[in-house]
Amino acid sequence: MNRLLRSLAPLAIAARMASGIAAEPATGGETPTRMRVAVTPIASAVEWDGDRPVGVMIDIWEDLAGRLGVETDFVKVPTVAALLEVLPTGGADLVLGPIAITEDRERIMDLTHPIFHSGLRIAVRQRRDTGFLTALESMLSWRLLGLVGVVAGLAIISGHLLWWFERRGNDRSFPATYPRGVGEAIWWIMSTIITGGCDDKHVDSMLGRVIAFAWMVGGIGLIATFTSVLTAEMTAERVTGTIHGPRDLVGRTVGVQASGAIIPILRQRGCIPQEFNDLHDALEALELGMVDAVVAENQQLMYLVSRARRGSLVLVGPVFESFDFGLGLAENSPLREQLNGAILRMREDGTLSRLMDEWLGRHE
Image (cartoon, rainbow, N blue to C red):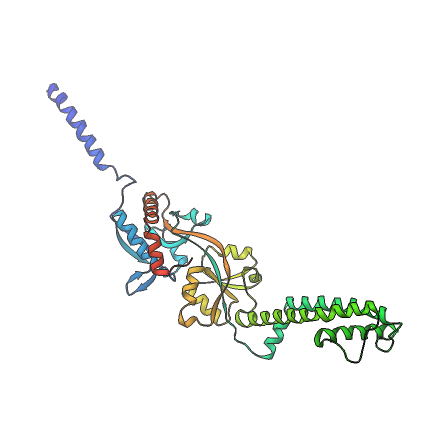
């Protein structure tokens, strides 16, 4: 009997080992056959066509899924704010986004290699005012006021010099008494700038004529400069208002997408961010004058502003505060390395660039 038990012991141990191996979970590197992919409507990236999402990010993901050999179950999420919360709650395996790669985002999810690189842009309401008050407002710009101040200062200084040189031998044109004589000299200079001279006054002294000649020649350049600056200011004011770039956003109310990564950046720049569920709502608020500008990712704004219904909006200023955009995964996801490898292969074989160009056009 003992011999029989001893002979069966190795078989029992082997059976237990086999049972233990079968009970072990799948290794972390295995790829699931199906994935829940959370998406939300994002202009130029994801839109809904019936019950199915379409867009450049959908095509990019389907190519990635094909390379990984997985099936997809899309999970529709209403807003970007909700999209950022779906992974921690276990509502999806992957967030398609695209998600701006930032330190704050990295704390709540794992992020893949960048899908594309972009930056921020400003949209403003196009002004079409042509009234007298609009023109007057344009003339009160700091550039014009600064130019007028410089000309006035030079005229006052030159008027004193001209009166000093002319006061003794030309009392009829420039009286010797200080207030009246200097006033007549300044009046002569201003007349010379505008009309090229003053018929009822003449300059006799040599130094006085040097000053007069300088103003006759310089007046031509001053009038041309003043006209060009005035035209530029009035044109810019009528078309885009007073916001021409990121520096002009200080103290302004700026519409942004809720929970966007750009909100802390705008606060640092001195803006007052006003959050909206999506960019469509933000741009509608801009058209109604509820905000001064809208700031968002450049490609999204280009797409939305180019729509026919957005004819009253224009983009201004350069692209600023650039970001990398990727996909989001649950923390410590075993799929991160596999997705990163697939993204790199898409870059190297040109698939990623081709899909971006097909949907968004080529922008050098």
